[in-house]
Length: 360
Image 1: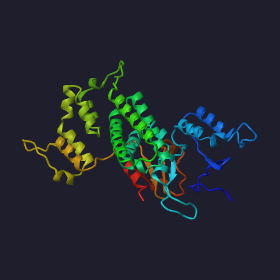
Image 2 (image 1 turned 90 degrees about the vertical axis):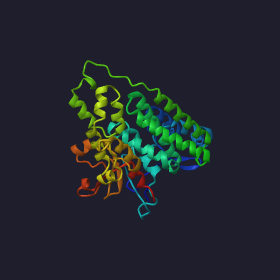
Image 3 (image 1 turned 180 degrees about the vertical axis):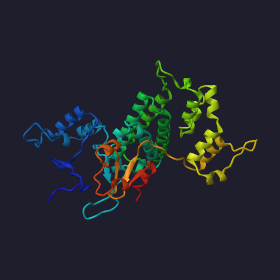
Image 4 (image 1 turned 45 degrees about the vertical axis):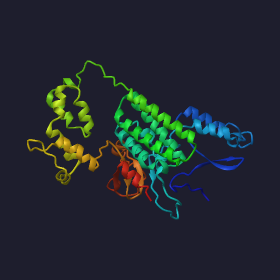
């Protein structure tokens, strides 16, 4: 009888024979040379008799096993771009898909290298830090902090959107401090203290981060015509980006205080019904759209905008990353879809919707 993994459409797991019996072999993808050394040490592939007691000493020795777990600090073992979301047991497949399993299986390490998906992954990690951290398995928690470390390293190297990462680290450190006080974290307390110290160190590095202007012979933002600067202001969907840019000089400050700009921002994030319930007028009887925006965001969630998101196929119940280039060239939907028109079954998945998919 062939072996069926948790997902009956997948090729299944890889198993190795040890002194203690058969054990599942888990793959790592951080450093190919490092992982090759680990795998050769574990399997001894060059020998004809790989399952002798001498070769299995790695599995039998607890200290060496812990060393293997510490060295293999990569995103958890997979490079899949799709996963079947199972919410119950069937004849073909037993069990269900959890949030931690989906976070492990989907390739978030590669996703953060794509600027279109970067903000999406950061927002997802922030939501997990606020409410779902304890629901992750130990392997998923380890994967979570490995992905977070790569995000911080990318921000320090590229200087891209440090404010967003500071918010993520602030929420995560607050959650960890609360969980440590209540003693409800699973695992060694020393590991969690080390993780908290790493977060505090990252926060300090981000606070001391100096944005280096790119020097060149071309024009910078302040040299552009006034109408082009105003057009760029209207492209922003984040109020803090408008305020920060308006602090550069007096001209940009005037553009950042434009009533029409803040009206456009309010109508983008909120509805007219929300305006009526929280109307703010100036001394001249005009609507103060800037104050309206900051008041409305206290009561209602803002509209989320991402360059690229995960997609969910309603026909196949598959969650996946959609490759737009492959979809155009090869008409590939990004997952093994059996529908006649796969594009009609796709639904973009927001970070909150991603978490809600695994609320049973």
